[in-house]
Length: 402
Image (cartoon, rainbow, N blue to C red; front, side, top):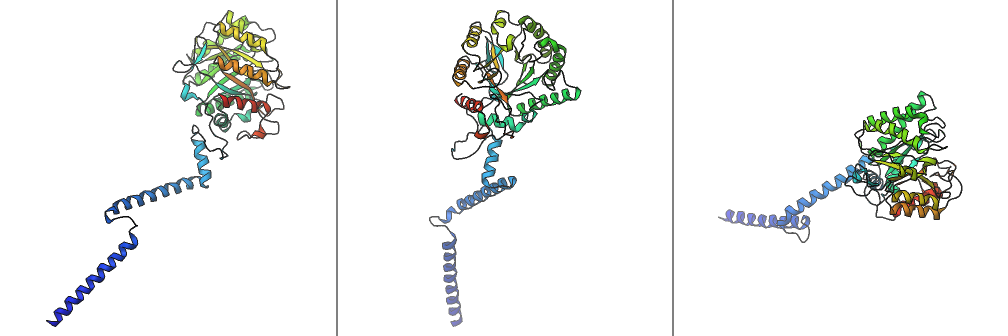
């Protein structure tokens, strides 16, 4: 009987010790303010935090760099995001004014205006390369991406000279293949980035587009066949007819070239140059071509061309002529000399008020006023303010306003 009493006391003491031990354990490991019924919530929260941490580690591991570098890479990949942090030095912040191919879709011409896929007025604002034979290094996806994301450029013009140094029609077969390759690369880069691209048959010293008409037919047949299902290509079939070339000559040429393109691409916008270095719009307005989705080019250089040429443009618009400024600068007509910002601003006001697209000349580091980059700049992307010419700085400011 005595032994049973001792056993009972022993069990009772052990029970008390066990209860105390459990209490101590719970007090240590259960967070304050939580009840035992919250254990499920605690477990879920812990798992979620663990997964989030692992995802962060996986992301940083994939780049091999710090969080800051990973964040910059994500911004590059998501080119349409906005950078709202003014302290972040990220050169690829997207311009809020950018309207890419996905936004505007297939372009067309209606009632003298360029319109988007929904029939609403559309504007392209971009930059032209210099001659591809001279400056091929800028036909790169990184270059186009930087122009798009940093400045809001939505169209690139590929200026392929026909007669000058290593011109398409004057160089040898290897040179011609090199230029064809550059056109292909430029189209592909622009397409990958959701940008429009102008394929420019850049006549200049050859004066009259009829001189190399057969070469032009073969070129446009090839390009339009290769890219017939693309909706971002604009064909510019003669850059600047000059040297007394008449509008009748240009019409004769266009009446043969346009059907070549239309055989493959029924709806692409086609740009046609006008006499006197693409200035005499009134001749086209008085006798337009009989094709749909055709526009007529005006080229100006603000320090040379002022009220007289602006008056020619306004008269053409009054006649509902579809106009596209496929090349302009703010220096004189030589591509060099001093800048006339006052005249340039007047031009932009006129173009913007009439929804006329415009493309700046030129993407190069040539030692002249119209070059986008300073001669000492050897970079092809990630340009800083110190790399830019005065014309480029003006243009970037214009793009930021629109």
